[in-house]
Image 1 (cartoon, rainbow, N blue to C red):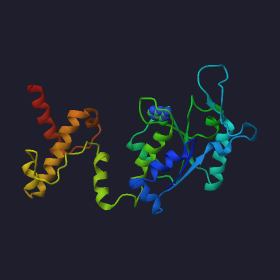
Image 2: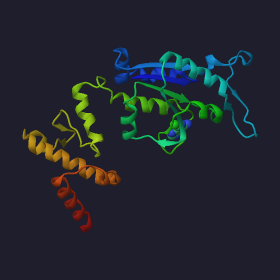
Image 3: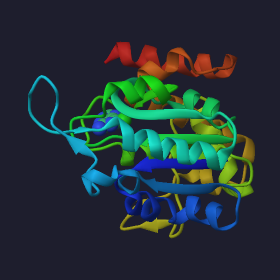
Image 4: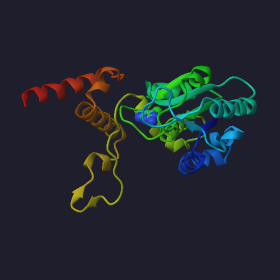
Amino acid sequence: MNYYVLTLFPEMIDAGMNTSITGRAIASGTISLESVNIRDFAEEKRKGRVDDYPYGGGAGMVMQAEPVMRSYEYVCGRIGKPARTVYLTPQGSVFDQKMAEEFAQEENLIFLCGHYEGIDERVIEEIVTDQVSIGDYVLTGGELPAMVMMDTISRLVPGVLSNSDSAVSESFSDGLLEYPQYTRPEVWRGKSVPDILLSGHHGNVDRWRREQSISRTLEKRPDLLDSAPLDKNDRKFLRKLLEMQEQT
Ligand code: 6GU
């Protein structure tokens, strides 16, 4: 997986991505990242400026089409074949795990990060294949959303997570929230670890964890239960929980 990020703040992208698991994956060559400063493609006469006043008036500044186009053409030259180009915008489709799984199939991804009041619509029409938002709130720019997408996609790329990390990755993709975790000490400030986890009975532990996942999901994100794949035992347990809810 090769990421290319068109941005006015490449140091922000590099600082975030060269840390922790994505940093290790970049260092080992499992993924690659090239942050491209759109300002380096400013027109000669504009001395490094890449924004201007909006036609029709109004508050704020708009990123000009030409520097964005030139930075895009530079990246296309580096890749040598067409690549999906994601524009990060609150107007986009809302990012989720399913979308991440789809993007993880690509060999190259270009991210375009806007700032100010946005980017000249004409260059968006020309180069963007996907418009993506990360949720219903407004950020100052597309850099954090691009990093959210790259982080989520990277952990789906083979070789990025260790085997023990990968096991954990199964859990959201099975559509339920995580069960609670405990580590030493066995009693912490008077609070004990649930007995079943100390029993050594793996079958009972698995069943308990599964039920914890189901009851947490019912409590915190009941919307997820509509599409979570539940087996016969799961559905029986869920019915029991719902009956108990009705009684209170
Ligand atoms: Cl992709 N960009 C900005 N500026 N704000 C956002 C967003 C994107 N997604 C949610 N809020």
